[in-house]
Length: 126
Image (tube, rainbow, N blue to C red; front, side, top):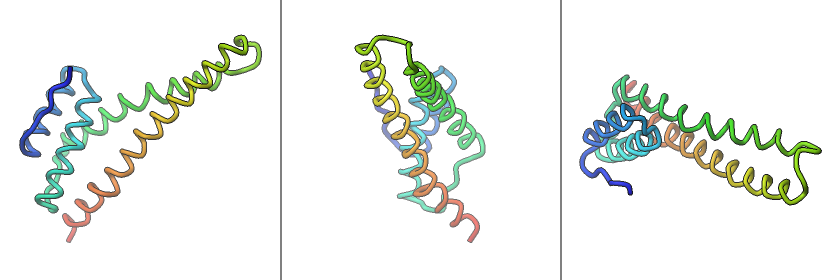
């Protein structure tokens, strides 16, 4: 059961820090993405503090690394002689699902950087 955090970008950032402290990197990433979108839309020259950027990087790493390891393990598990054809098919389907999940998460990161953080950086320099 998920609770949605409403409110300002700064409130979302505070909730993200709490999520990071209690071991919920997925939630921290989600709240920081929402905060970045809100802050950029309402005030394009706003900056995330270094601690906010650090939390985002750490949380993304904690979310993406297990997915990467899962995909890597599934690729090696599909070698010859590992399992019967039925199990191989199940592994292929699971690998496809996890690969799509990893791709989606990586695309979210690229979009966040391209659409929010790079424009923020550009406005801060100008």
